[in-house]
Every structure is written in structure tokens, then in C-alpha cells.
Length: 144
Ligand SMILES: [Zn+2]
Ligand SMILES: [Zn+2]
Image (cartoon, rainbow, N blue to C red; front, side, top):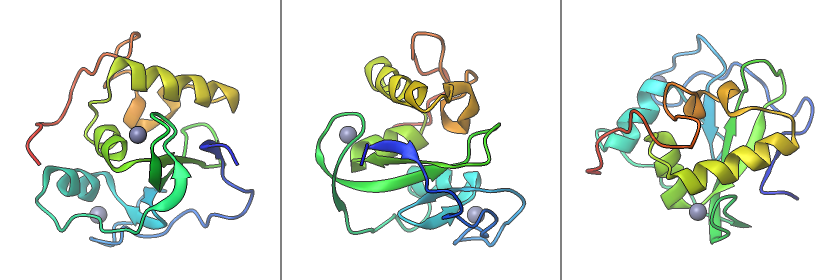
């Protein structure tokens, strides 16, 4: 199984409310099978909320190939089919806080292109957050 892939058809029930605040306006991202709205996700990363304590899976990070990952699932804008990405703890934090380095961004972009999805269709990789070279434009503060 690839470390970035389309989720199996019909395997994901779309509108599950946020596991922290119960918001269910849209199909929110999931981390290790739990749903988080963007607000709760950001609080989580900024350290205002209890951190994610999920047992890592025995897979390799889609960006750095390090073993021990959590599964990040997101719904691309124009696709009804979500994608799943295996990410190590460091890279899931960088993704959510919108401060991936250009190299990491490039690796995700390449793997997304294999499933015909552009970075602009992924909320956290949108061009409002990264320029064409994968330079982070609006990173959230570093202190965790
Ligand atoms: Zn929430
Ligand atoms: Zn990694």
C-alpha cells in the first residue's frame, strides 16, 4: 500500500462531527480515524487543547520514510473520494501548522499528482499557504 493513496471507495462516511466540538458543517479532516474541524485542529497544534495521543502504525512517513506514522485523511475540493496519507509525528505537525519545508511540500505534491490531485485541492496545502516553490506563506507560530 502506498503511503499516499485514495481511500477505498465507500469506506469513509463523510459527515462525522468534529470529535472535540461536534461541528459537522463539512467533511472535516481525520487523524487516526478521528474527525477534527480546522479550528480544533489548529488548537491542537498550538497546544491549547489536549494533544493527539494515537498509537503509531507500522508504516513509513510519506515525506521522510521514517517508520511509525499516523493516518491523515482529507477530502480534496473537487473529489468525492478522500485521500489517506501516512505521516510521522513531526510531519503531521508541520502539515497542520502550515509550515512544511519546500522539500516536504514537493514530495507531497509529487505523490498527489500520482492520484491526479493538485495541492490546491487540499485545504492545508492551498496556494494561500504555500507559494509555487513550496515556501510556507502563513505558518502558525512554532512554540508547541
Ligand atoms: Zn472542532
Ligand atoms: Zn516524516
